[in-house]
Structure formats: structure tokens, C-alpha cells
Amino acid sequence: MLINWKRYLKKALYFHRISWHWLLGHRVRAHEYAVDYDTVSATYNRTWEARMGKHTQSMLDRVIAQPGSRILDLACGTGFVLECQAKKLSPAEMIGIDCSKGMLELARERLSEKCREWSGRFILSHGDMLEEIRKLPDAHFDVVTCCWAMSYSRPDALMREISRVLKSGGMAGIVDNTRQTLPGVEQAVIELMQEAPLDFRTVNDIRFRLPAGSTSLKRLFGKNGLVCCEHWDGEETFEFRNGTEAVVWLFECGALAGNFRLFGRTDMSNRLAQVFDRKGLRSTVHRFCAVVGKKC
Ligand SMILES: C[S@@+](CC[C@H](N)C(=O)[O-])C[C@H]1O[C@@H](n2cnc3c(N)ncnc32)[C@H](O)[C@@H]1O
Picture 1 (cartoon, rainbow, N blue to C red):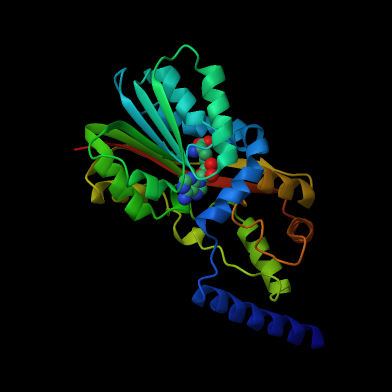
Picture 2: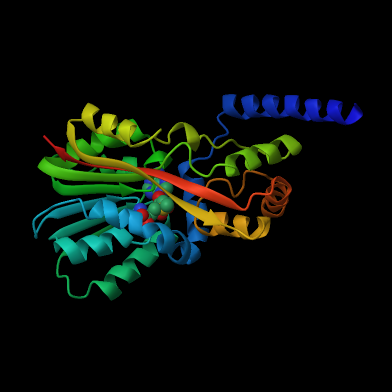
């Protein structure tokens, strides 16, 4: 009985703290994602890209453009998309934008090392993708992509800008996690917050910006003057031997970016691993959706 009271009290405190942080605007900000991705940059290619890169590639395979085109990749990360596009489309110009200096540094190395044959011009721009795209001219690009990152920004505003900078007949491609991604993980983070309601100092609201699925991405394209050519949903399952392995994976691939400092005073990774073990979590599923479309 006493234990139950303790639990209910903690739950009440948790809801109070969530509302408090929410009202005071203590949400994860763009610069915090940037800091987390600086940390992730060293492990990103061998974790996320090695497993999920094929799904990015499958979206890029559906994007058609002539050689000599102009390409923009939003949240370009370590440059996977830029490398693929340079090799496939031989563009005249490519611009990549990302808020993490660590990720951009790897993109720069990658393009210099792996795209020696390509003679086009590339610019890697450091900053918030929505702020940076607003500085770019109307109807300038033949292809605009944004992979695994749209929800870090404001999807509606970003899509409006993508449409504005695309030439008529130009193509856009998006791939992103869906709201149903990583079942079990979000619940474990909430459980951790409920266990230590006084320890967390910010809330992560990315879930509310994630698309429900490819149909909602298709609608977003339609609203902004883009005709959907193809849209699809997919998933990739990840298995773990124990909670520690799960947590290492989630941190190293960037899936928990924005949450690294969710807890101010406690060691989040150890405690999260304990929650996973208690819940017996041995696998999770990255659920995602993608759309490729054309500007009318
Ligand atoms: C999951 S990674 C995807 C990287 C790349 N698109 C790929 O497919 O490999 C997410 C990227 O989004 C970047 N990012 C997050 N929020 C951003 C923002 N507001 N503006 C620009 N880049 C952002 C991160 O720095 C990170 O490089």
C-alpha cells in the first residue's frame, strides 16, 4: 500500500514537472541537437548509416535529374546523400546544410576522398536548415532532399521552403522516422522520468512533429505544390543481448539525440539500461516513411 502511494506521488510529480517545463519552454533546442550530433559523428557511419543507409539509398534511387543539375541536401550529416548524388547524377553544384560541425567535418572529408572524379562545386553550410534554406533563391534547385531529419525542424515551414527553392519540374525526396518508431524505447524513457521526476530538466517534443506515415508526408507534399510520385513505409528491426547494448546502440546511432542531457543530475544511460533489462526489451523497430515528388 505504501509502495503504491509512493508510485502515485511520483506520477503526479512527473505530470507536474512535464507541464512546468512545457509551459516555461524548456524544450530541446536546435543547438542541443547539434551538440549531441557532434558527439554522435564518430560512430554514426558504422551504426545508423551501415544499417539504415540502404533505405536512404532506396529513396535516392527514385529521384531523377539530369547531369549538371543543382542539388540541395538538408541536414546532410556526414554526407551519405551528397556522395550518392555526386556519383549518380554528376551535378554541377551541391549544397549541404547541417547544424553539427562534427557531422559536417566528416562530410567534407568524405566528398574530398570519395568523389575525386566528380568536378562540380560543393558548399557545406553550417546552421539551422530552416534558417539557411530561407536565404536561398527561388526556383534554384533541381533536387532537394532531407533524410532522417525533417522532424528536428518545423515540417510545414520546411516543406514550404523546399517547394519555393525547387525549379518547376524539380524533385524532392524525404525519408523520416514515423511516430510509431522505436516501440518500447519511448516508454522506457517515460518510465525513467517517472522514477526520478525531479531529475529531468527539459522535455523532448520531437514525437509531435514526426509523420504518422507516408500518407501524411504525401499530404504535406500536396499542400505545398508537389505531386507525389511514390510514397512508402518501412521498418528495420534491431536486436540486443541486454539493456546496455541497446543503450549503446541508441546513443551511438543518434536515435537518442536531444536526450543526452534530459537528466541533469543522473547517469541516464546506466539507468535506461536497467529499465530495458527490467522490461526485458531485447529488440526494437525503426519505423520509417518516405516520399518522392515533383514540383508542378
Ligand atoms: C539522423 S542524422 C541524418 C544525416 C543525413 N541526412 C543522413 O541521411 O545520413 C540527422 C542530422 O540532422 C542534423 N540536424 C538536426 N537538426 C538540425 C537543424 N535544425 N538544422 C540542420 N541540421 C540539423 C544533425 O546534425 C544530423 O546531422
